[in-house]
Amino acid sequence: MSSPSRIVIASRESRLALWQAEHIQARLATLHPGVEVVIFGMTTKGDQILDRPLAQIGGKGLFIKELEVAMQEGRADLAVHSMKDVPMEMPPGFLLPAIAARENPCDAFVSNRYASLDELPAGAVVGTSSLRREAILRARYPRLAIRSLRGNLDTRLKKLDAGQYDAIILAAAGLIRLGLEARIKTVLTPEQSLPAPGQGALGIEVRADRADALAWVTPLNDPETACCVKAERAFSRALGGSCQVPLGGYAVLEQGRLWLRGFVATPDGREMVSGAVRGDPADAEALGRALAAELRGRGADAILARLAACQRGDAR
Image (cartoon, rainbow, N blue to C red; front, side, top):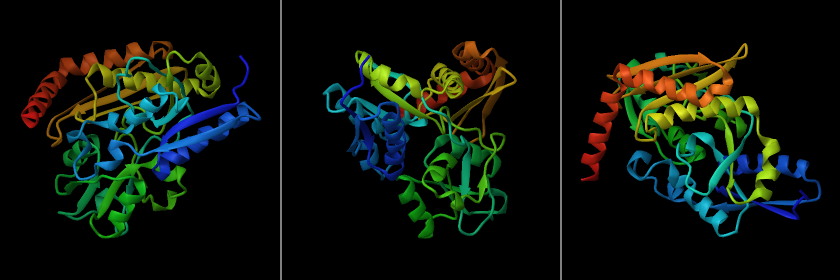
């Protein structure tokens, strides 16, 4: 297939989202010399509504809907997303043909006064936008006060610097990508804070009927990252994963085998069911579903039923 004359990338306009789009822009420019690769910046509803937790305003899909509309209308050829922000069920007519090599997938502890979670005194205020992180913190550090933290990465850091929080928990990948690694006091291990499915990985979304766009971006796919993220997303999907469900899922390849860990919890962290599976990387999606089934059989179903009941109550 011949190279295009122009490729348009739809992106949110936050500094981190633009870094991600520019990263893919540079790689596409290398793959297609002489082609004009441009970024079409957009502000999404998820960026505009900052006074409520994400779980209450429609979930992570709010960050990508406008980008998909731009692709549907022919204003953009593809979109670049942080994979942890991509809903587990892709809308009809869209595909994720490429997942780029992963940055550090772990959570990061950021504070101007303390070196670690263990140093925080009772009543210290910790900010996070994630029910997953909130459940982990409440389970392991019940003495802390957990508060909602919305906004892009720079906004969250400003809120910390203004003294609204004693510490905040962010994805290490975003800080590293923006050259803010010095703000990280501690990188939390997966044992301390199991990452979200897809955390640290970038996905490229295109319309399913755009064979040309599929061909342009497929060479950017990193097979190892894609395999791990596929298992993580299958696990989350099988549990109805969304930002309303405190859930972690993280896979790695070790000695040719895929190792997937996962958990589901209540937001208060009082109940948590976790487990792990190992198997052939070729069976990534099946392994994700198998781990979900195992957790359902050990109590996750009851947790999910209560979460659903709470959400129905909130809706009323």
